[in-house]
Length: 246
Image (cartoon, rainbow, N blue to C red; front, side, top):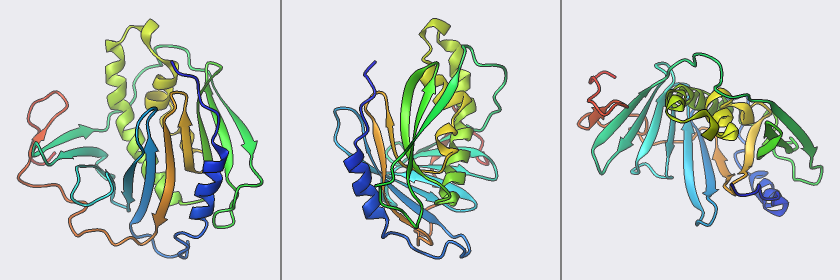
């Protein structure tokens, strides 16, 4: 497993400086659709953009445009839909509760580091946390406290909705081969990195990064951005066809 890379503080400061002038809408205004644009990069790969749209009914994740494949969380139904235009299919994932204890010990800890020189965003100072599992640093996150709370709420719901599905796959892997960082992040502590504030930038031990590069409150999304294609076949996780109303 690759070592966790040192924090690229200049990149963090540049991102914070860029964001300090973005989205300065009135935080007290009624909540519409929030747009979050991220730049992601996997170890050894080229950076690419992903977009998250959040309103009170839905969370949509896509590749930055309205015509791309997308994943949609219906927040009331706690159901995730993954839309593939090429295959004309919608994969349906229902949220499931976590049952039982973790299959291996998970001792979690967090270490806080101040960055007083980082530019403030909406008068809020970014703070860094190192997230440990069983004494190993699994990831680091630079957060802005009390910032874009609508986005934090939506991302929390999305990750919790997926956690039960990840849990169902754990019994298929021998305990000695389970990765504590993976089990914690994806199953038993899926919103841990979101408890301190909005994640401006994330790093993991494998060298993967995710950086917020833009945001917009009261984003004007396409009329069908939160609609599912009615003509696409709906599939369940087991591969069978899902009911039309799923």
